[in-house]
Structures are given as structure tokens and as C-alpha cells.
Length: 245
Image (cartoon, rainbow, N blue to C red; front, side, top):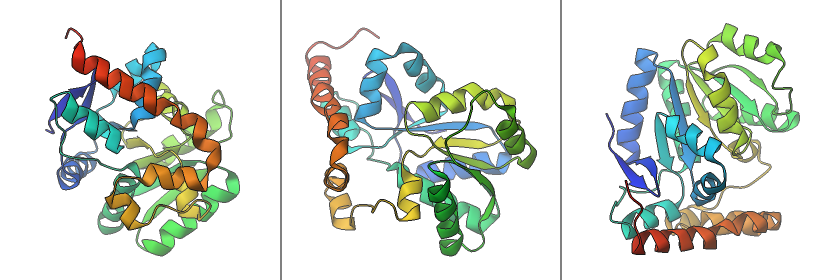
């Protein structure tokens, strides 16, 4: 069982990537239904204005610190996490496990052309991976056809790239309808796999400024970055006046 630490009222995984993957591999072997959220400061701030979304995150099996801001906040608040666990890297490690051990995967999200390219690229990189199906992210949530298709294929892993908060809302809403599976929101990772968006070079990742690289690539994201100063202010407030637990 992995450790967790409270950061701004949310229980984040306190583990290395290898420790996390050992736990996820165990759950895959056991066929345990698992809900994983990869959360950055923007997601944490959304919880401040959406109690229902915060409730969804609290129900997840594992809340992964995807963002150096979460790690820095944990240290300032006296709850230091082991380190950042990038959502894209978690996804790639799960693909590696699937390639090695035959776990099946279903991919949901992005535009029709993008998801098709992403799946083709995954199959090129991991030739033994079993992707049993995929579907674009523009569909009627009340249409049972897609749910029945996924249920029939019983994937071991379901990557959901609808962007937050929709991907976590969709998973939480439908989780009870599945017998097994590891469900994880992957944000814009399908865009990276499809080559639509380039991931930051390794040096940017090492310096923990991948977010800046994304902003330079997609200037339209600047509005989303406005959550960062509010996040910093919330951390400072928590440091000065801790909430009652």
C-alpha cells in the first residue's frame, strides 16, 4: 500500500515512480478496479470552486502529483512528497507494462484523427501492446453504445483524454458499470502521441519547466496559467493559517 500525504486537503501519493508502478502492476495482476487522477496546481485550484469535483478526487484510489508546483507546495506545508510523477510518464510506463505482460488497453479522447494517429504511434513504439479499441472524445455521454463497447472488450487499462474536469467526471460517473479496469485521465497526452503537440525536451523536464514549454507552444493556454498565482497564494495562506483537520 502506498503512502499518501495531505496537500491542501487532498491525499497525494508519496512514492517514487517505481514504487507507484509496482502498486499498479499488482492491481493489474489482481484485476482490481482502480481510479487514478494525475493532478497539477490547476486541478487543485478547480477543487476550490467545485465541491463536486473535489469529492470525485477524494474518491480516487490514487492522486498522483503531476506538477512541480504540487511538490513544492508539499515541502512548504511540511508534507514533503517524494517527487513529481508526470502523467505522461505514468501513461508511458503503463504502456510498457502492457507491452511486456499483455494487458489490454482502450483509448478514449481527442479528435478522431488525433486518436487514430496516437494509437498507431503507440503500436509502433510498443509492437506487443494490445490496444483493443479507441474512440474520439466527442460523444453523447447519455449514449449507451460506447459504454457497452468498452464493457464488452473489458480492457485492463482505459486511458481517458477528455481534459479536466471532464475526464475525471466521466470516469467517476461510469466506474460502477465496469467489472474491472484501471481508469486514468491522461489530459492532452494523445496529442503528444499523435505528434500534434511536442513534449518538452528532456532538459526542460529536468528543470521542471515543462509547463513553460507548453505555454510557448500553445500561447492560448495563458488563461489557464492564471491559476498558478492563485495556487501560490493559497499555499502561503495555508502555511500561515493551517486549516483544521
